[in-house]
Image (cartoon, rainbow, N blue to C red):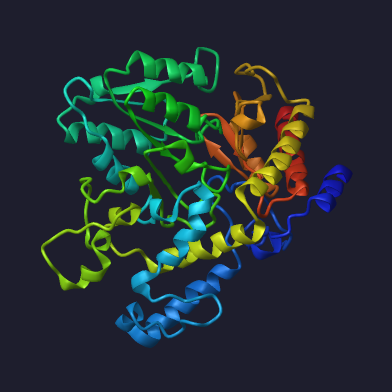
Length: 443
């Protein structure tokens, strides 16, 4: 497609060559070594080429030094800035903090997404009498629901009464900000916590984090955010927005590998060491950590919420990706490229004869885009709703080399990642989708 080629020449994917792009052969789709069209960074980002060398170096250090790698790493001073394992995460924090708009002491690299959510809920969900409710969304990722539900039970609170779930208006797909604010007002005297997703995983909606946080704070309500689909996707300013806490994973847009280590944010105003939390020795005073004292002296800031020493392999995987973000530029620059890619994708989808601007009927092979139209209300992901033959369409697309993401019962998510996807990828995706619909329709 000439337009895609022109856009790629004007706005090239300069870092694409630093990622491994799956091929037809590597995916078991034949012997063809052509690169696939991978628009699935919202589920699992592609592997940076530097990751394998970074992991191999830590394995070699383990082989060479064993336990002494914690304080006597054999490759410190080499290119890549190897770190003694006891401090492996500390040099990575300054790379991560700008991604979420935080001070260095407000960020910790630790655990996994839901483990961090639970740990932060222990510290920040403080039900008292009738002020015990948690406001979140009806369509929340199930893991979040489970965490909220069980946190209520741990506090002796009935989840049936305490969980306030918001859902879109009838006939709509995503929440209106004014409806979220109205719900906060409605339950303001009963809410102990508001906890929402920065970007909704199913629709791709980007919520107004700053406005919602401020609205709740004025009413004395603690606010936390699940940023699984927002981190590395859209610019965030967690410190300036006054967010109380947040957590995220790093295997989507941060390209750190399947099940990779998560992250946590705790605003500086909560950094006092007196805040109760789930505790472990890695959150304890570093100078006395190995004295094995029965006295917990939590590190001030987010690092005091760490419980165990982080996985060395996980941390270096995250570091290699964050170094690419640093090479690319600011998150504003990442966002600028993302908007160009997503706008192009949206425009091509709307040209399809199978595009419907309203919900397709159950017998219709068409699709509609359920992601908000306005650019400021979504990230890199566009969600396509099908009411017929979604499974067949998805399988056909994969067989033709389009790696996307399905979310049952009827959505296919397409997410061009700005660090490695191209405009040609976008054009290929729409062409493959069109061919799939045409083939199934003709049958």
